[in-house]
Image (cartoon, rainbow, N blue to C red):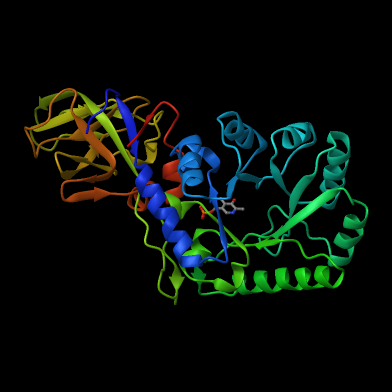
Length: 376
Ligand SMILES: *Cc1c(COP(=O)(O)O)cnc(C)c1O
């Protein structure tokens, strides 16, 4: 199927729904699944993905920022909780209350801010408290006693969850995840002794679900990558991966020109590619401004007429040149696949990431706003 855009992604709603169901099936009925739709649902379109998940009966979504949460509410996402994992800044407090967002609070001072917010807005404002159990990023490092004291000062703010995030859940060559979980358990147990036992505890993203780290699932998991069809490979002696998910996004670009060039032709900025023989080349209407990594210059591949073929020369802002010597079937206006499957060939985010020197998440999130999203 082709679309009238120079560069576009096709997103399969059904595949996202299937991936969500796979996460549900793995964690079982006692555990809720928050669909992580931050960063425009990893390039898939947050509003559309949120609608699909709501249609599947999801009760939680998770985003990074208040702004992302507000955009979902304004887009009509109602009747489903939205966890703002990056918390809120003082000037965003009003929007948290107005749009019924649930912030992940990561300092004791912010508990006091939620308290003020709840009083000022005369609404019940629920929040989740994020514990830094050893990732050294967001989360409080306060002791259980300090947390209990802060909670005592905030009777109107409603603590609904305790959460943490793992730094290396896919790494089975070390104990960091076990250590983080033990720290989290210890804090939770002391809070429980102090009478604080919120409804949710949660620690796990895709990797901790995929590799079955069940001790960390509690009542809720936060899955992003899996919804889009990916589970990162593990290091060391990992148990079998449980999720049955497949990529939901295909990225295409149209040929603006196809031409024959003689041996010795230099291609692109800097003349970094010299044709070793007479070649047929194609010029695609997509470049690094669309999200094709500049690092893929002279290294990356695309799929043209069902075959993997190399990117030639330097990637430009709006154009990328490829080798079409293997086919005469393609001409101006035809589609080439940048990410996805075509015929027998496939090229997905992890392989592209390896060549670009990054991770699969980075490839998906970099597909720019200029690339049209088409839902099928
Ligand atoms: C992004 C994020 C997730 C989702 O991670 P995936 O690996 O995409 O499943 C979960 N929790 C937090 C705190 C995150 O920032």
